[in-house]
Length: 72
Image 1 (cartoon, rainbow, N blue to C red):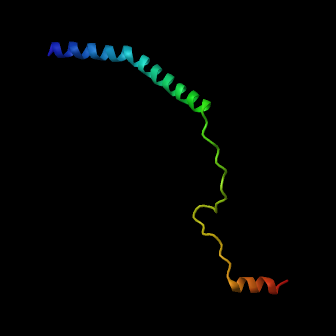
Image 2 (cartoon, rainbow, N blue to C red):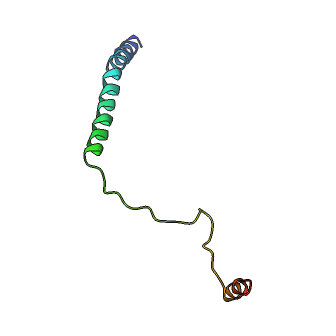
Image 3 (cartoon, one colour):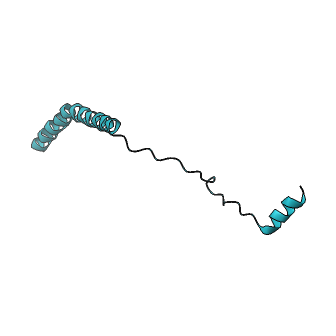
């Protein structure tokens, strides 16, 4: 049992000592990825006009056209 605890202590100390290095490396990779994206931006696509989410487009009927022209 003592041998297992010794291995466990060594493993925990190794993780505690290497964790900051791995976290720093991950941060550096994130920054590099952001810089690469900034150097090569994607082409800008023009925004299309869309109706509000969940709403159907308004369809005009012949009756609505007749009623709207009658009020003129």
